[in-house]
Each structure stands twice: as C-alpha cells, then as structure tokens.
Image 1 (cartoon, rainbow, N blue to C red):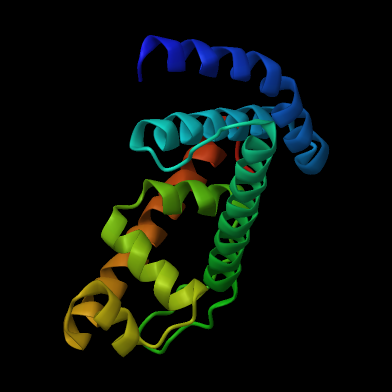
Image 2 (image 1 turned 180 degrees about the vertical axis):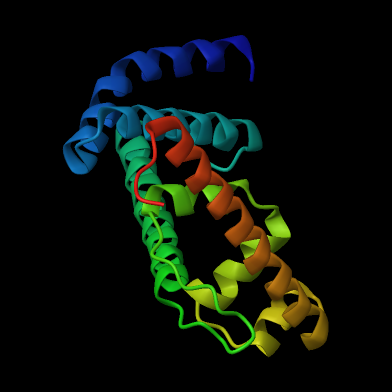
Length: 177
C-alpha cells in the first residue's frame, strides 16, 4: 500500500471505527466480540485494498463487511452448538457404550483442542449429519479409513473430555464422583 493510500485508510479508520464497532455492539451485545469482529472488518479491508478487490472502501462498505463477519460468527456458533448437541445426545452404539452429559463450554474447548482431522470428521458426521461415505468423500479417504478415523476421533474427544472433567473436580474439590 503506497503512503497516500495508507494515510487515507488511517483517516477512514478513525472515522469509521465508532460506526463499525457501534453497529456490531448493538447487534451482539458483547463488547469483546464486537471488538474482535471490528478488528476482523478492518483486516478484511486492508486485504481487499492490497489485493485490489475493491475500488472504494467507505463506511457503508465496512458496515457491509461487518454484517457478513457477524453472520459468519453466528453461523459458526450455531454449528458448534449443533456439534455439542450431537455429541451430547448421540445414542451409544453397541461397541461404544460411553453415555455422558456434556458440559457445553468444556465440550467446545475439547473440540477446539483436537487435531484438524478429528475435528473435521466429528463435525461432518455428527453436526452436519452426513453419512460415513460422504464424510469419506469430503475428507478424501476410504469409507473404512473414515470409520477408523471416527472411532479414533470419538476416543480422543472422550479422553480429553474426561481428563478435563477430572481436572475440574480436582481444582474445585470433589463434586460428586
């Protein structure tokens, strides 16, 4: 970005920041989330300018980006909630007798801590509700390899979840073992 364009963007930033932040804060009622999304909006603007994807960046354009960033956030949150619900309500299979009520926050933390391949497999299968052959196709694996991956992913999730629950009981005293 040339110096003149950079200076113009800094001026726009100072003018648009309160409007973009205000737009997001009014809609999400969470100051920290509004700050994070506002940062994402301005990073997207810088990327768009550098790539030449946009001719004029102004407040209306930034508000449009903010609207998309907020919608993406709500979609991701809904997807995470569906995954947690699916993991919490999944009926035990005959070879997989784990039956537990999951804590949403802990389940999200555990899912985020899993490797990408495990998280992807669990999300596609249990959140999106895809049959194993479709999950296999999307992951570029055979059905057999995908079934094995799902078993490993469920086991990794359970082990990490149980380890986290034990750690919480240890820190907070014995809460009904």
